[in-house]
Length: 98
Image (tube, rainbow, N blue to C red; front, side, top):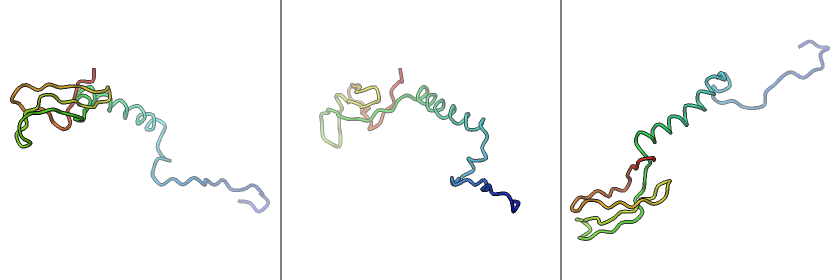
């Protein structure tokens, strides 16, 4: 800076702790597009997760025979009736997206 120059020096007061300041626009655009696209593809391939919310069974606690299970998903509640004699009501289950 010259002695007669009264302009303030250009400074940035925003701290940048990672290397995102040197990232190009193409990398940022790719990240914005690829993250939702990846989540969409995972849901389409594997399905939406559902959490077992309520169930009915007969038998003892050690040897449960489930009659019906209600799962809470993003789309709402889904009721599953497993085949007789088969323990198929897990805590988390994947359901088709559409």
